[in-house]
Length: 232
Image (tube, rainbow, N blue to C red; front, top):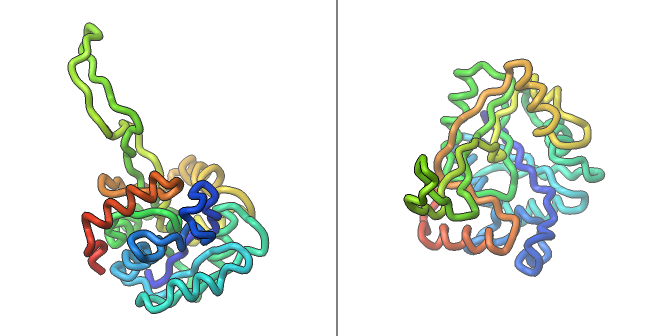
C-alpha cells in the first residue's frame, strides 16, 4: 500500500494548555508532532503518500509541521465536522489510486508493524482489518481464590477484553460503506462484522492514546526511555 489516511480533526480540548493551541495530532511529544511518529511507521511500511483529514483551515498548519518526513503529506480539510467515519470517507476521495489503504487515528503512539497488519488483511480476504489490543486496567487488580480470599494484587494488569486501537486497513468495500457523517466504529464496522467481512490483528505492544495531560506525560516518558523509537 502506497497511501494512508490519518484522522487529525481532534481539537485537543482535554489537553488544555499542554496543547499550545494546536490540533491534537500536532501537539509536540518529545520535540516532534504526535503525527510525526505515525508517519515514521507508515514510511517504514512503504507508504509514500499520507492524506491528513483535518478541520477546515488547518491544512497549511499540517503541511508545514509534517514537511520533510520522507512521505508526501496531503491535507484534506473537512468542510464541516463530519465525525471520524465521515472524515475517512471525505479523505478517501482524495486517493490517487483505488484499493486498500491504511487508516490511523492521529493521536496515538503504537509500536505496530504495519506490514504485519497488511499481511493479515490479505490473508483474511476481508473488507477491512482492524488492530485490537487489551488495554491496561486503570485500577489495581485484586486476585481472589475460590473462597474469595485475596491472594495478591497486580498493577496495570491488562483487561481480558479486546478493543479497537484505531489502526486499520480499509478495502474498497469498507470505504463504500463509510458514513457521510458519524462514526464508522458504530456503523460500518458492525455492519461488516455481521456480514463476516471484518478481520482483526491482535496487538500486545505499546498503545498510548493522547487525550489528557496524564496521557501526554506517559508518551513523553516512553519516548525519553526509547529515544531512537521508531527506528524508521
